[in-house]
Image (cartoon, rainbow, N blue to C red; front, side, top):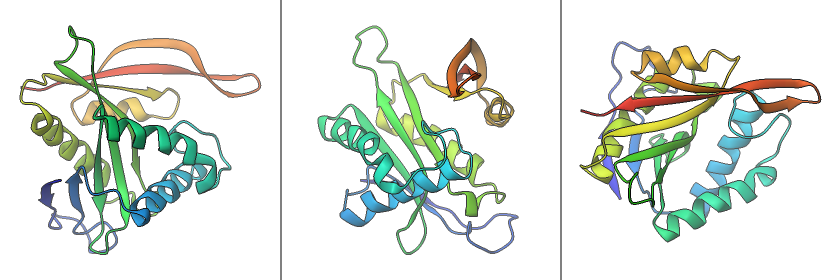
Length: 192
């Protein structure tokens, strides 16, 4: 477990987002597992693009969460959690490590989430900065982070403001309804 930093409020009004602690690879307890499932359901139900469509319950996301947890146990996935002082996860990102020998110099960032009740306080940017630091601590040889996002929601602008560059787009690759499709946008952050 690596505590990346304890965030002190910076030019942000006091409230729910103040003082999050970002931890890489926290111990997986039943409370954390349940908190991750609840976070995932809450983000989805607020319209977040994290692999599901509304309306879901924490039980609905459990199979996908289990896949992440199994990969963590196998050592191919790492978890970054932004938690309150009481340990409640309100921001997360999963790192998927490359096993292909020609691509071990970069990592995937997946299931990036900030609880909807905690948005609007700069936590998204804080999470992305913590993710950059975490990627470097996972392996100093990591030279980049790759992620994908669902087009049509303005996420590309957010990630661009965090230093990511759009490097590809697959039109209509994501089906969000019977005849509604969104682009799958590929983004890259080079690490110095």
